[in-house]
Amino acid sequence: MNKNEAMRILSTIRYPGYSKTLTDFKIVKSIEIKDNIIEVLLNLGAADSNKRQIIFDEIKAKFEEKGAKAKISTVQEKGSTIEQKHYVQSAKKRIAILSAKGGVGKSTFSVALTIALKKRGHSVGIFDADMHGPDVPRMLGVSERAGTNEEKNKIIPNEKDGIFSMSLGYVVDPETPVIWKGAMVTKAIVELLQFTDWPEMDFFIIDLPPGTGDAALTIKQNMDVDGAVIVTTPNRLAIADAMRTVGFFEQVGVKITGFVENMGYFVCNKCGGKSYPFGKTDPKYIEGLLRVPSLGVIPFDPKVEEAADDGNLMSVIDTEFFNIMDSIAEKIEKI
Ligand SMILES: Nc1ncnc2c1ncn2[C@@H]1O[C@H](COP(=O)(O)OP(=O)(O)OP(=O)(O)O)[C@@H](O)[C@H]1O
Ligand SMILES: [Mg+2]
Image (cartoon, rainbow, N blue to C red):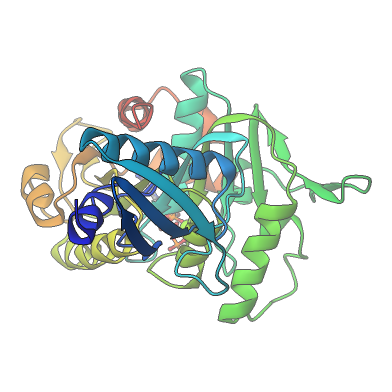
């Protein structure tokens, strides 16, 4: 085996939890070949021991298949391509909710998905990563300030109906307007993730602010994101923006699980007929454009809007809206 061949093999090995490979992340620093032994030097940055082991095992197995032995060593370089942190490991799966545009229903969807997963028997938590307009507390109907555990130097997440949550809204005075700049947003998110005493959870839902700004990158760099759902409305402009968002997140190594069309249709509460305020689109057509699967089309329901505003989404659990949320939660379970 020569160096090129060895590099080609390494380029097929994915970094655990990402769609990108060891070579995409420029982790392979050098390769030396002596007889049948391939010496690989890796810069694994902040990768934890679990991830290191997975990478080592995979490299060894791949080279063994070709009749060669791997000898792996590592260096830690400062400012490496991947300074990945791994907060909220107490959750089995971390799912980010994204959108290109504001006001398409991310927060409503995030809270409703958390409720739907809980109803399906999972332990859940939700993190409000929107520092400019933290909406999760209002939608959950939680207004208490977060407690602290002085001994552990940790913030205690709020809990209501078995749903754990953390938001900037729990730690700063909601009456005080704060002008957040990029670096402050990053710092606030990292501190909330790092210092919250999260319990064991099956699913951890992250409600992101719209777009591909600091908050999105910070989340990606500070936890292993297992899945991501794009929320869009079915109008053309929103879909065009969603296409750019998919591209951005895939580029930074976040695998998009699928998209949902929120407010896809409206059901008349008198005649039961459906109308399509944004025009009727075919999810298959959008799948073709975004190249990610449709997870569902969610109706606009004025009762949902009212309940979200009152912090009482549980009161509309018997609606078509929540039936569809349940089928989406079922797909999320498979991540
Ligand atoms: N399916 C729905 N049926 C009825 N009302 C909805 C639905 N989805 C969202 N809404 C309402 O639309 C408004 C905007 O939703 P939401 O705050 O969830 O959007 P967002 O994408 O999180 O916004 P932002 O970008 O500001 O964070 C809210 O008043 C919410 O209650
Ligand atoms: Mg929001």
